[in-house]
Image (cartoon, rainbow, N blue to C red; front, top):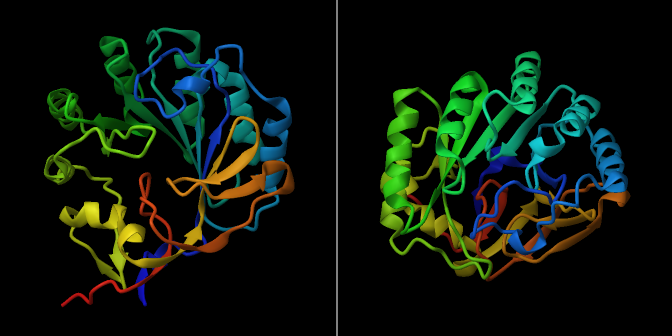
Length: 291
């Protein structure tokens, strides 16, 4: 058995779909068909999620808050963070930042970020955004923002320009390939991803038996459970708008409902694509030894 990402054993990543309202309608959005501007906070799930997080043992925990667009309900967003924050927890607000730079919610966000060192904004740079508003907003949030750049064959030229802008302002970013709902990629040449990711300071690194792997092998890690018998720790979880807990991958593994709490489990995983993250601790049978 080769051990993958042993340093992440027991570390939780939660993605909470706080609402299904959004000010964008990006064609590649994973929940495009579910978006509904009438579906703001599900109050029962909101309270159950706070309770479940506060009942977790004290260990490292990253919470991504998304939707929809969480800044639509910015006061409830800030309430959620205030009621669950403690030592060892980091929050990422996943936002398109597609609002006027002088708007009340952006001004309130800047104030809130100045008061909370354990909170970052992960700003998704979409083609549907007002580009000037987006640039102005990430510059206002420069000290606490990370930008996610969405890569496909069609968006590659735009992503290259975005990288130049972000580098010129010393703003960190991550690059994510765009996938279709069936798990197929909208990027035909992963060499482009590997090439652009060389400049990505937050690239999702992979360790096998304690050895940092060459990121040019990224496609191999994404398909590791398709090629090798893999035992995976289910520590990257999504809490849906209606309270269902599932894995953050193309393995449709269901873990119940948030009202019953959160537990880390391990499963035998075979044939699935690690589409969103290689973060999880895994034990892999058959991975070749590194020289």
